[in-house]
Length: 265
Image 1 (cartoon, rainbow, N blue to C red):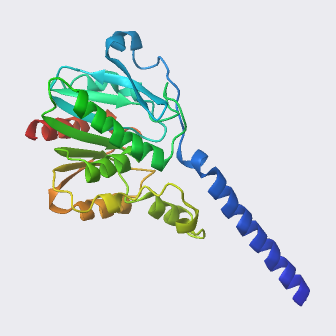
Image 2 (cartoon, rainbow, N blue to C red):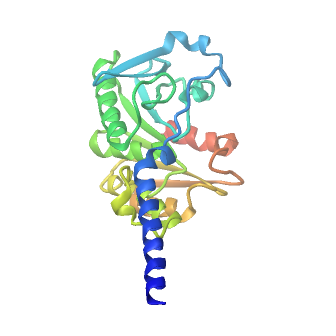
């Protein structure tokens, strides 16, 4: 009986170790879903003159710069399954801002493979590149992050001066989300991409707009609320009613809140 119990426990332990190993080695495929460039949603030829490629450490990052002659700049960071050309039509409306839409490594026509270290490094490089090359000089810079991109936007804002931050369906950290969804796993030991937004939300002194979806099926409300609490008095949270994680942009109140924020800045 004792030997049977020990054998059973060894099988359980082996399965647990196997699951941990699979999570560790395949977590990139669980977090990043690179979407390739498609024609759906926009006639890309219409935006050909705004096409841009930025080279960083032999990696070409491809995307578009909308309204390139404007003195104000929005740097956009999308979700983990988002190809940024999907936003070209909607983001054209902000005529007082240049809007940089660059696909992450491995997304669209960008080279390489995504990872926290790489995406953070790219964000800093692109910020420096845009502010050093722009003519006329940039007067105001807004960082705009959606879902996964909210962590990148906060990281950049903690390292470089910005004038405002827009966060859509943000989270406190990927590590905390992993703990919630996989409480039986040692998330601290396994995660290579913790995206700790709580850490980067400290000591920010610029206005922050947080847009949360009432029916978010991906990011739990307590995760977003923890981040809102951390951001403190500079944060303006807006709950978009009857919206989910992936369709929040379909609500008129979503665009109204962003436009108010941009006009107030």
